[in-house]
Amino acid sequence: MYALNSASGHLDWSYTTPTGSSVVSSPAVDGGTVYVGSEDDRIYALSTATGHLAWSYPTGNLVVSNPAAAGGIVYAASDDGKLYALATVK
Image (cartoon, rainbow, N blue to C red):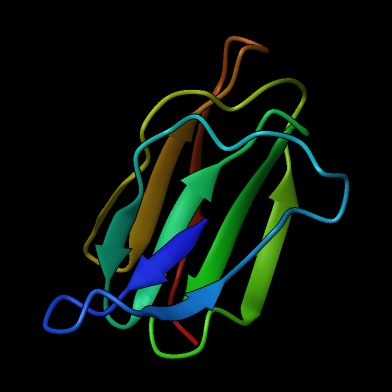
């Protein structure tokens, strides 16, 4: 994942999954956190300011759907046939 500065076009930060798997979902942004699913069977939460990993959660299979975040919960579907609802409140 890459975060580009909208004014200058320069790279602000980048993040690569520890396994090197692809991120094919579109990101969801809520409350200073960007959420993405990955082909390494995880949902990732990254800081929008730094790109540092806040947390990740293992699912039972690929996460190629686009996550959605609302009301302190991030929702993401996995190819294991389940919808994951994870509290994002710190």
